[in-house]
Image (tube, rainbow, N blue to C red; front, side, top):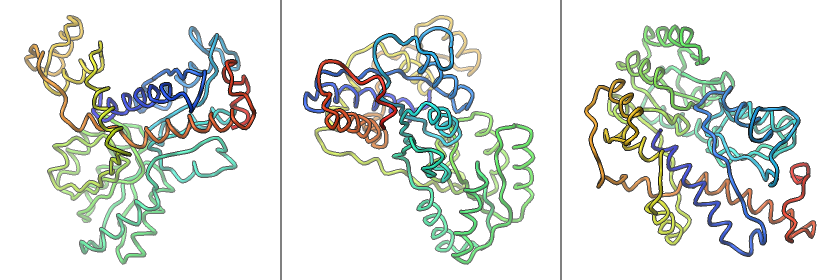
Length: 350
């Protein structure tokens, strides 16, 4: 698992637990959750959303076997690549969705996506910050590598306003052969600065190709590119860092206690195996890891996560709180704060 994703999941779990402990927010209602990993793949994202809508067992569109419990809303995803198709699907059914990382301006269209909201960074402000960086460092000839045509063009316009020129805009399509040709074209360019644009989830192949083909270029990484390995950042690379706002010291302390709470955490075992070569004590998994990564794995009973893991990711915290308070306001206005649970058509009113 990716380090950031692990913290995001626990921020979600912690946020839901805090809401359920608050007797004034959603009295007589207990929020539950289902967590699915899209792996940055739009197909998996759509499949997961359909599975949640349909309930356990085989996916049956337009039919629900969930049993008890109504869906209050969807939180996610982090990238535009997966958030966009989810928004298109949920728009059909009228369910609210709050992304905590997608930035594509098309999602701001309230006509197309009336049920979509975001706590993610504003792409327009990112473009201004990047353009000002280009001007301040005296760069006059740059390349844009983007995941969306609109985003790349908008960034180009902003850079032009600050007196610099863009040699070319390369677009990543998700097709390995096409993306490799795009990167080869960038590699041959005389421009020495490559600016990443849009958003992208973790992709080991793309990370490897980027490192190999852009190692002689200065690379500027926005907040929304979340997969860049740390070692890549120390080789001619500048990265914009998202400010992880903590709402108060009490919340920070509670989250730290949540992370230290004893539990059977399979994700933590995988994370320690990935970062510290620790045995998971799952023989089949340990054998696979040692064959793939060619490292000697060991027992790590006393190893703990670095302190950055113990800070809640504020964009996820905000998404959880917004969804809960929306439910509170809706139930308060309809006079349905009682023991009957959420109305069966709550998503139609959001």
